[in-house]
Length: 386
Ligand SMILES: *Cc1c(COP(=O)(O)O)cnc(C)c1O
Image 1 (cartoon, protein in one colour):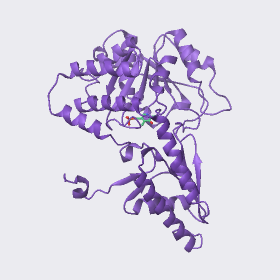
Image 2 (cartoon, helix red, strand yellow):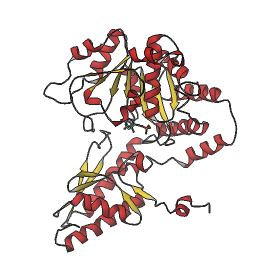
Image 3 (spheres, rainbow, N blue to C red):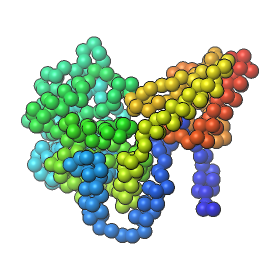
Image 4 (cartoon, rainbow, N blue to C red):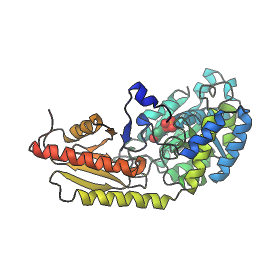
């Protein structure tokens, strides 16, 4: 048997019941993907040549004019933003000075501001915010129209379908595309966690995105440190000039041949995967959970659809009756157990169990642990911890 590095280091293995959360490693690569990466690592190649071949194949596979592998979606957002600035000023990004970059403007909805947008803040361009993150006065078309100036390099759009965790109040995607197209402004879409559905790999660019950015390490099940940019050939030309292995900002976002080949292998598998069967499997497991806890005095299982990222994939909210900080207590009991189970609170008394990142035997383990925690709470007369 190969060495167990985690055991040697005393690092606990975790059952990930939360979904494709980066803090526990996102998703798992298939053996086929791991083998492709190992093989890629064994030989030297000319990176540019590998990129040309893989990017052309990825474009073809995803029905896009062009594609690019980056070191994560966050890196992809930065690189596409830098490319948009270069395109606006008609010069390679490395040739621009800070004053020139500072004049460029990137438009973003206030409703879309989020912790990932340091990718934009660090560009050094002016971030022009529009609208409000609420429904009292949702963003109007004229808010976007007035924000577009001769310095606008791009509009950044954070795409998440209803049910996901973004604030409401932004213009919808197609309205944004329509106004942007009228002014010749590229729209960069952050769709990092927006597969499934698999069609998002091409429909968002068909609808009008110049570039759409996906995380390779989430449900695509590529390398954790990979991202996929797809889009229009004339825009991605600027991405190619800006991204690794070009010197300049792109050099900080290095992508190894292992990631390039690994993401390629993962996308290939993702496109031929039986997605309907995967959903059917999740539905069967959820129905089974519901049945198993049907008569439980403490535990109740609800099906949640879509999931917290707005993806068309069912998950569960498991709630516990009891007094005190119930969800917090359950999360701690799951985390402290062996094996450790990681998930998120759905509300004050329930936790998510998302089949997306789970295997059958892990779901069995989670069911047993939930049953035991339910018994504990029952025995304690409904009180939880301190
Ligand atoms: C996960 C995520 C990112 C970052 O993706 P990485 O591949 O981890 O860099 C960016 N934006 C959103 C909305 C995300 O969910």
